[in-house]
View (cartoon, helix red, strand yellow):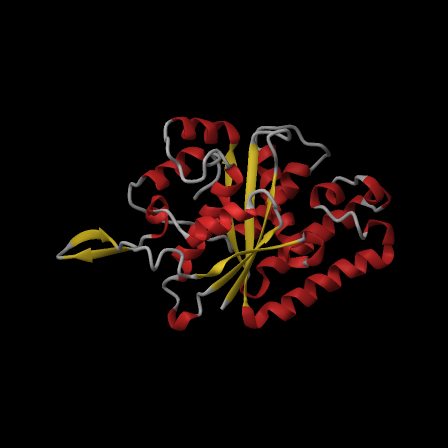
Length: 279
């Protein structure tokens, strides 16, 4: 069994990029993984107790609030350490990066999307579809996954309903390629086995109650800032190269959707994704 902890970064008032990423951990490694992250965070909080209730990646890496009293290299080392721990011992990254402008354009040309105009819900369902595709081939039910989201009181009820009564619109994202009489075919899904690798539904937790959700926040922010810097100005010397290095680490363990049939769902996300994000 697997656990995946998911968080997001970005908003329409913050720029054109929205990222949602999850860290997947094997159940038997969950306790050790959590202990490692807790220990790293507690070491910082012991030295700087004033930042315990202000742990948000965008704040600590940019030295806002109480984090301004902590040396920049210490903050950079903390974020680097979180990314390294995330992928250590088989941690996997799942997620998506959208451009708001491209998302809106894709919506305009694809009426009837099952998530309405919600970029959050669409990203969550894409992430769950990616989990479904990668886990459905794992033997002996070892791919069954518990999805744990950073709490979003507005969107979570919609996500739980979308997983409970899934739309066929998503089928193309997780169909597997096969052959029949020498011809390429895509293995279909039925109502009973759509998202059957997701255990029951998605669950919500407050980020300050789970260090692994806080790590998912860090991963999401790293990808978002990296994409912003591709066309933007550095906030401090060497920032661009610093994020390039972090993304190179994470990309070693990021899962991608791979080959898919030409369905409305697949076309939508190819149109809505950030141009530098490979699905």
